[in-house]
Length: 427
Image 1: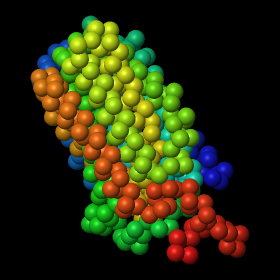
Image 2: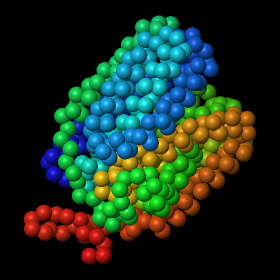
Image 3: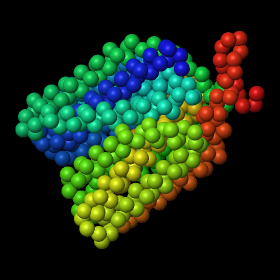
Image 4: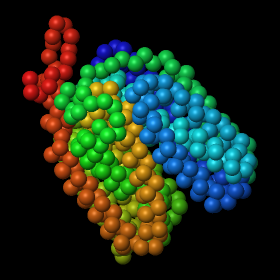
């Protein structure tokens, strides 16, 4: 990594931390703010959460093309300004229409940040450093969300609207501060793995859908987000309360255990996954999550004490965190390495779109099942976790050696005339 790439990467990581810190301030308290503080009711609060998903689904198909044509930095700056406007207006919105419009603006800005930042990480890293860069991004995101949520919880007061207005104003300031930080980034261009399929094809959704490995990765990604992230705050929490008798304080402890596992284990896990096949790492994550669902089944369907049930339920969230730590340096770099040169923005946006679809469908399916169909709920998502392992093994058959084992790319780089360039495997 050159000095310019390192300087740009440091600013990008600061940006990730600031954006996550700002989101952590408000996301946990949106429902309370809309339903109780503004007195707009549970239906409007539920619509606000739905608007976030809908806004993301609308803007992401266009975000990829914009990143390809304009570059990730201008798109990120526009997204940050949009999110700042949405956050600020949400803090002052007093009726349902204003709240929904503000939520849509904030959701659109947040959605576009993800692929723009991911593409910047791709452009400022090499095949050798990309896994570590994405691991650092995930670490800082979780740390920022946790710290932001903790501080925000001490600032809000459900009896004072002004405390929430302050919260959303701070979030808007975080986004604007990030605009200032990111405007100083000078984007270099990094070497890319040379044997990704479709390298010379133009950027289009048709070309992307013709990449079998990318299509399989998107299917795998949908199952990953549907079976894990889509259950955290919906089906799994409802199952814990209804089936396992978990208290709200214990549920908070479980969520904290998930974040703590990620923060503590991220770089230890990175050393484990860096020299292993990406497809095998994802397959292992499926097995770990299957164990997590077995622990959840024991918590809600077993006959142990309440203390044992609570411990098993907290272990479920911790095991999910271990799997997440293994995925962060694996899946996002794989999306980048499957993209033809110059098309990372399109591929990152497509994968972000798949993620949003899974996060929209996951709670809708898992919530009612977790609350009422306890046994079928656990069995269903246990099978989904095992399905992750199967899909990962199948994906491995579509990947080249360098895509599945990126450290092999070091032997493909040779010096020609004093400059380094990537050499295809056939050479």
